[in-house]
Image (cartoon, rainbow, N blue to C red; front, side, top):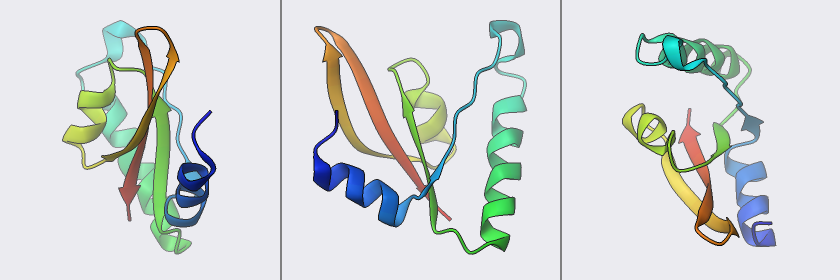
Length: 89
């Protein structure tokens, strides 16, 4: 688990949690970006300050490309990293 300071920061600065699963044949077509944009717009209306995601290494590039920043990472098991990423709204 992430240290308490990381968990508190995520809840304070990025309280909304996002989880997206796309089939491999749907990736790269803009669906993930559109889902994040729609979610972001709904949250902005409600004055939510940010979104966080937890993911493995593969999707990190996608999230960084659309504006997320790495907040922390932990080694879930040897050689397997889990990232906490945040997007300010």
